[in-house]
Length: 126
Image 1 (spheres, rainbow, N blue to C red):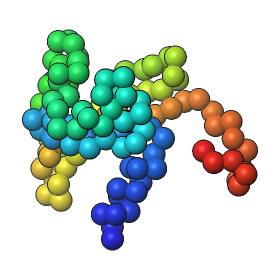
Image 2: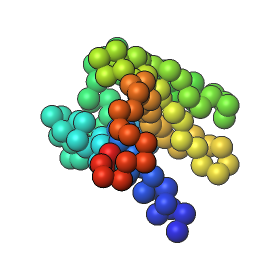
Image 3: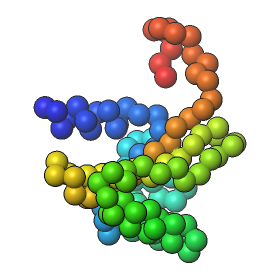
Image 4: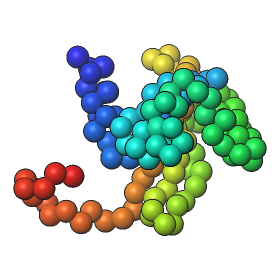
């Protein structure tokens, strides 16, 4: 049951969530990610190498972050980029198993644009 709840959290998130394993294979994209990356193939990117979607400088940065994650179970999140146009900060986050072993990573988007919807407005779906 808990696994279904975790998946639902990801599925409902309006921010793009792309999970990768340690070989940089895209293993999951939530619907927001599939829509966000639709011009690059969207959900068809699942099973492909994330590094193939980036330039050499970005690939090197991703590799460095994953190596840093692997150095310590305390190395779990790092700020990587600010997108002024979309008013969001982007982080890479380590994914670890129950023993603290690194099993993958994902990119976290935190939007800084204030919500414009009215609080508890049941007539409008976000």
